[in-house]
Length: 118
Image 1 (spheres, rainbow, N blue to C red):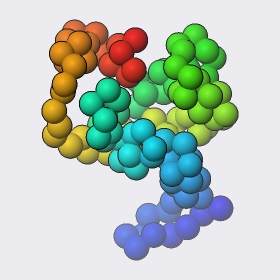
Image 2 (spheres, one colour):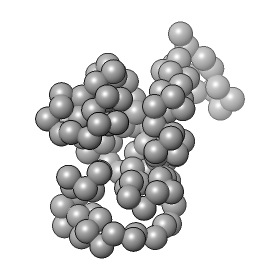
Image 3 (cartoon, one colour):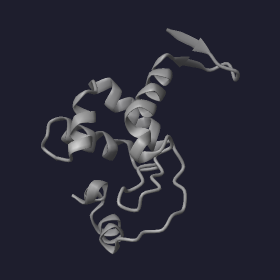
Image 4 (cartoon, rainbow, N blue to C red):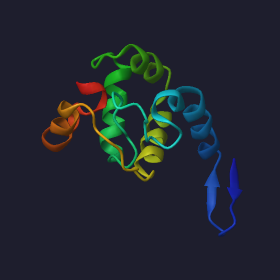
């Protein structure tokens, strides 16, 4: 299904589907915009889409394990993973405080470790 939005661009129904997934599965931990308010949950807003896609695939295959993330990601199709990755990468990261120095270290030196500290 295609929609014409105010600026004349064509958008697909995928945007509405992504919002449903975000609200149902992601917002409790990541907030709607990927800016978690829990210092134990890293923000994913503004991360590279390829990175987010890779991490979701690892969770979906249970190669990377986190009870909530593995459950949520394994329910997603490949298209949904790609759409979510694009959605969160397009969000603007908000400033925040890092209470766990390991998260700062991981972000600076090992970006693959930032989500859930693995």
